[in-house]
Image (cartoon, rainbow, N blue to C red; front, side):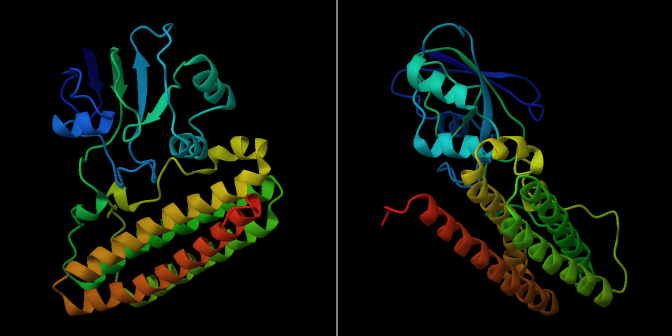
Length: 288
């Protein structure tokens, strides 16, 4: 029997689940079955939204830990795992501090799982901000575009610092596009409400920030792909916002404006995906 204790600032109190053999699965699956609000988007180890901190009650015991290649790669991208931790997991069966809830299987051991967040369903089912007019749409669109521009500029600075000038230039170009959209919004809006805030699942993921610069500097070849994936993940948040507005708004003018921005976001995503494909092929020349 495994005792799994869930801790989070969004929960009124800690919750301990007794996961008996045959009813364990991943941390995420157990959490979902007991209405524990671990955030997740894809549930397949692709996005990193379900990252959790796992503490073992008996930390000195060997746990026969198993990290999938997908989990190792994404944790490394997020700056949540070191080379030493990967080696310790593979050679000494000792688990790292952070895991992806959708990839980490519960074993016959007691653990404490800590996380942040407040949703248990994918972001595509998220509640939109109140949009009752075109001007409301512009107020939130301004936040989307400003958020993207700031983070692209920060990513560009990180890439420049470690010598990847071409990636830095790409990010600055993407930042300019977002700044252009922001100027367009400001020019067409009658007034922008500065107090509006996007829900967290539409903003740039906080775990994809230039705080990873030191990690990227240690692995310069992989840093290029990591940074591009960071940009892609952030860009997809903006795309998702415009997609949902265009798909659900009952105001024709709002839906039309959202579709305009959506088309442009799709182009930016396509550019980043082409760069990622090229960089991945360069790293793995023998792959088909």
